[in-house]
Image (cartoon, rainbow, N blue to C red; front, side, top):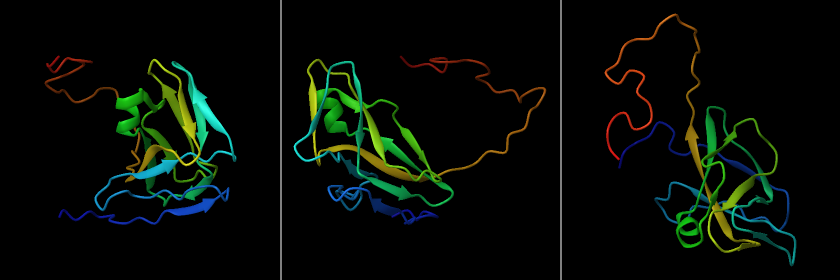
Length: 155
């Protein structure tokens, strides 16, 4: 097993709704915590093809300084239904204290209905490096240079 400098950063969760489900890892080596929809009793959200819906999770959190939380798609939703995270990966900064919500987009051909407690995305907590920005007159030369998309080969 590879040791990391931040094996278990604390993640404080505050439920904003009694119906909220605390994010949880689904296996011992899972990279992401599953996020579940938190919808009012008896309500569901249907996302039409090509549309985006903001789905509440019913909790707020405190991410430690020096970390971010990345909201990522669930592969099963993407493969089976064409439903993914619109701004993947979405970044939640460590100073945000509002409700966690997930922007889901339906890229499939059929409407997709989100029910309460459905696992809709995953949350990966990761360290963040803050760059020291400096303006310069020129940049160092590299073999790639200014080559853009696809410039290093491949298809």
